[in-house]
Image (cartoon, rainbow, N blue to C red):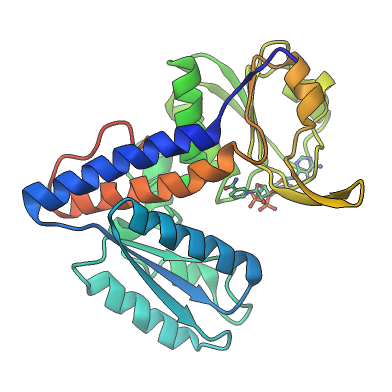
Length: 296
Ligand code: NDP
């Protein structure tokens, strides 16, 4: 195995340290404490775990964490009223509505009710448009984390051939926009892509965001390419439950120049970038300089 392992866990620790430093300066110099509100509707076990760990890390970096836990049958009007209240609250700089929402709630309507300046997930249509036109926006956390790791590893990404596998609104599409913004030549692949192996073999950078365990084998990877594995898949192997990514780690690592592991790669960066987005939103709301290196 020749690839450098990109340690997302360690990198995320550094991002959180940087956020914490900026939070303490905001408190000392301006008397401002960034605040993040997380709204959870229902009792989806995975969502509960995510919300708990987001809350814990928010507090660890010195920010205020507010959690709103609503019943699974909450009416849309009540959820929208809560978002309106959070939009108007000057102590709250970031609002995150944990997805997926129960079926009776319209996700697009709910997300677009969040003040775009507080939309730390970067899913509001205004932020999507700003990112797509290369303007300052709130950038979705998972692709932002991938970009930070790529920049850290390569310095400039200019001119590199990048293939993003997956075209979801939360990962694939914003990832492609960010790589384009860094002057990569970007291909977006999806379930209808013809000869995916051939497409991936041309890439200097492969970002896999599919949700299919180990679907990218090593012989699709160009020698020396950088592989960013976004996938989180729970599988049974040898009688045990195991987390694996969308790429076959061992065989891809044998050909890649660098690769992110699962777990310990993209996952930890996602929460670190949520905290980074919250501090960025707080600085923007108060007309203060943004921390450097914490956004796209
Ligand atoms: P979605 O299900 O929304 O999107 C999956 C994408 O993969 C779709 O665009 C789909 O194509 C494409 N796809 C499916 N099958 C194939 C195939 N055989 N060949 C090529 N493309 C295919 O998933 P998400 O983007 O939300 O998430 C992707 C993965 O990333 C999941 O494992 C998820 O758990 C993980 N994830 C991890 C995060 C982290 O923090 N590390 C955060 C968010 C997600 P089509 O559009 O044609 O259907």
